Amino acid sequence: MMFRMSSVVILIGVCISAALAGDKPGAAPDDVLAAARSYEDGGGYEWRDTGVPEEIRHQDVIILGRSDKGTYCCGFTFAVGMKVAQAAGLLNDKTPQQVKRMQREWYGSVKETAEKQMSDAMKNIGIGGPIDAKEARSGDFLQFWRTNGSGHSVIFLDWVVENGKPIGFTYRSSQKATNGIGDHTEYFDGHREGKVDLKRMYFARFNASESVAQK
Image 1 (tube, rainbow, N blue to C red):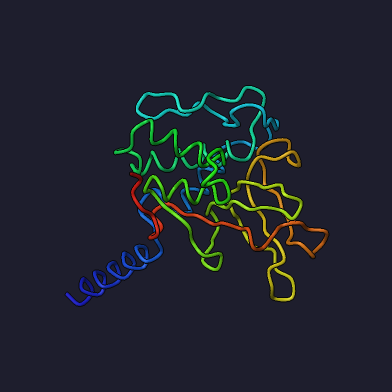
Image 2 (spheres, rainbow, N blue to C red; image 1 turned 30 degrees about the vertical axis):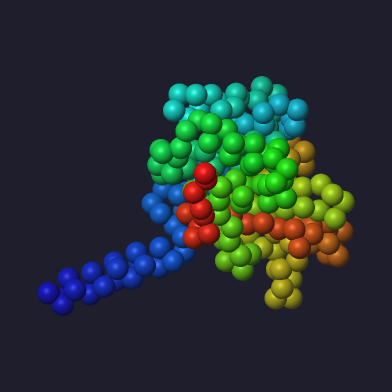
């Protein structure tokens, strides 16, 4: 009996910890990372197409057609996000029109959400939202901007630390540097010729507590 009671207490503790972290089965950062790794490296980089490595459907409605010549950042992260969200049932009660709206926000095509993109897209449809950079872990989504005005949509992997402080980070996405899908590292402005703007980094996670239902 003591063993069983201890097991129950441990199980409850694990469940509470997962809830506080904002995770649900099939939609945690580990699941996002696994989905991101399921796509082969390379494949070419092409920003003038849909950017997705495979056709994206919701309720048998085509959201985006497969990019024929390669992928780019928003397309890659959106494909990963859709794969995880659908597997976890997060989109079961969402219409194709809502998902198409999420896709446009994810890509930065909606003026009101163009700065944070993925974070706002998840929040507005009610399946996730922003998290603090201090809470970020491998498999979280990240939209960041550079001091030259360019931006990138990625899956965060890890911080690059020097003298006990982060000076950059490694991520998985689609970019010219890796000829499509691959892992890449960038640095903050002022470190190793980096250009990442620390004030414009937006992390997001499925099931984050800040999520609100889209009207």
